[in-house]
Length: 105
Image (cartoon, rainbow, N blue to C red; front, side):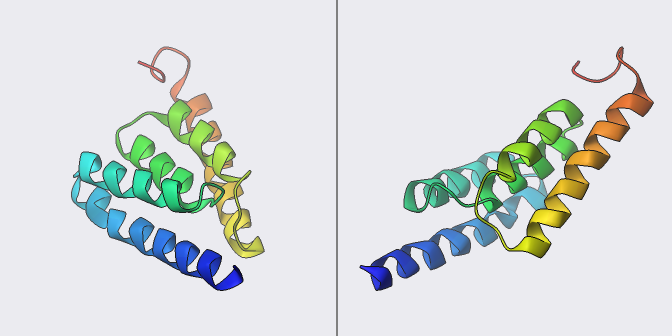
């Protein structure tokens, strides 16, 4: 049973890495791979984190912050959790700098 779970988790991480389509601006393709990762192992931090990066790239800071916070509820190494928390904080601070008229629109 442990081996099956490890294989599923490895494959889920691989699918998240394949979501590098997001770097090229192909967010739909990235989301397709992230959904596949979620189906394999639903409690990983990585898919929500990548979705937060996509939201940030699209200029949706509120969405990015929410995704990063969601990601913190998922499983990740301690150092990764620290980086995700920093990203959530940065997204929140950027929203404050932009002011209420700009974010969320």
